[in-house]
Image (cartoon, rainbow, N blue to C red; front, side, top):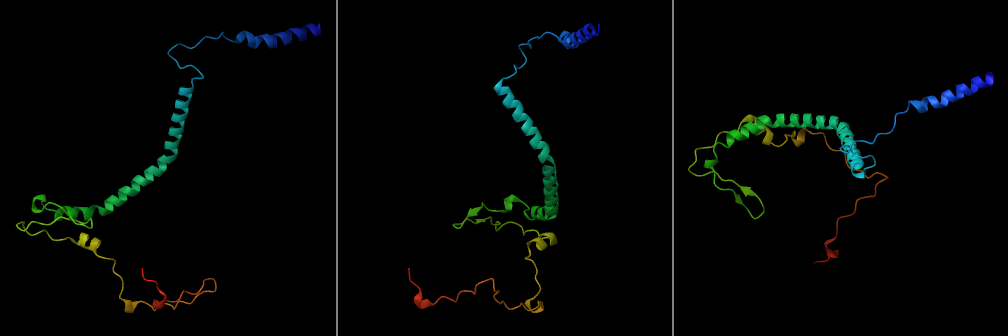
Length: 162
């Protein structure tokens, strides 16, 4: 009796899941076929690009904030430059020099140019350094044991003229 019960129980366990499976139905013709190499590559590339953009997004946001800060810091200077270039008609056609410089001359009959503002003047001024007499004296250079001594000045008699 126990043996019969064990056989029935084992057969129920084996046939139960097999009976629950649904028969295979092929996918409709408008769906992609599995194993299509082109679509697999396309899906892989799309996933790669989405992950890349997701990883790069914080850096792009920071770059945008930094560029915005830079443009905002130059805004007053650009506004003054815009005021200096009062009317394009007051200037001659640009002229390119042999060294590559470009000159844009103001016409002789044009009204006097507007004054340069403080913001632009401060921006164009070279960095102000304290006078040399107010700086502490520089220490004399002594060669360290790690570095070789500097080469002597070249002798003009040993030079070859080319």
